[in-house]
Image (cartoon, rainbow, N blue to C red):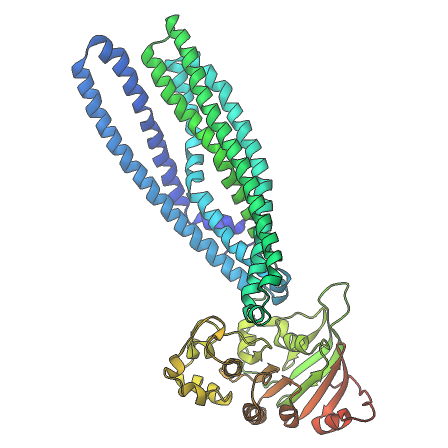
Length: 576
């Protein structure tokens, strides 16, 4: 995408259909010119055929109209197909650009908005597509030809032309007022729907907790309140929309009545013919029809405007680096922290408060501390998915900020606390970040994670299909598959956050042996309170309120942490 600021994304999406829009304008020109044939046909039948009993003329007119109707059908079919092509291209271009934008956003931005916001943003793509290729787009192409119809009415029936000139501005005012009211109602409806969907997402995500605590009745009032509010707002929006739609219909009927009345008076005064009045009524309907549609379609225009505004906001968000100036060779795994600070809110307390020191290359390093001490946040900073408020993280003396997430993912393996598996096979989940990995690499990663044996015991082995979240496997099995995923690229730096929290003693001991062996050639950092893992660590770093309060060889730190006098804090200059 060439531009992602302002409405550059929209211009880019529409630019791919520039030729199609020229075709649509040309087809719409001929379609609307052919519309004139019916009123002209009626005018000729009443004023020439009926009055002069011209059967030959009638035959010619009917044959001509048959050809016109057939050609009109072909043109309308062609316009529909062009619109479908435009819809496909716009949907593909905007959808692809939005996906690429969202996945390139920093984790902090993604975490700052609820899941329902991001789901709704992707639904906005549908509103954009429908607005530029649906009935509203066809209406915008047909509206300019209302001037042509008015000119023809002015020529064949001047007395009634001025009636149409009075009603058209009234329709415009009604459409504007309808759009203003509907925009406010649609915005409120969206907010209440997102609130309801947010609660529903929480219930589905926590379905095991909901069932185990029998929360159905306890949560029911919250659900019913949000559901009732959404229904109430939707009803109010529907009533307002129906009111303006019905008013537009009444104005359309009134236009026909007034035009016919004025035309009848003009006929009595011999200022026009009956054929002219009937033709003028037909043309008047073609002129007023789009104006009436504008009242009901204005909501679509407002949705387009609001959707475009929200997409503008997303595309204007700062993305992570997507290109690196140079490709470096595999790092040795030396991690350096320079006066590292991080806080979740600009005016909040620092979660990481001035950590400074070096880790590796090589060795197994444990990170411990109480809940909320900053352990997980520190790993995310070292992995590069969080950006420090100040200070830097360096890998082999190179600032992480200069690398792309793709590069960092190959160099720094990371296992988060919450292991997420996706629908697909076990093999797909292990190699999800490296789809080109061969079978030997996948099996080797599973063996390191002590997952291979139980996987090959399954009837389908590595082809065993998993549903959303890895349902069907135990939490320990899911965790081992997630650990195997971190081993696939054999990263020089491995970060594991509570990797043994769901493992039994035997599996935990096996993981400890694996990490001990892996850390002989690579740098491994593990957040854990497991005695088995801590026992094989080379060094341990103790965090408290984002600060390093103790660091050093594992044996010394563990000895100081045993019951007895409190450990004496060490210098923060060298965490490990």
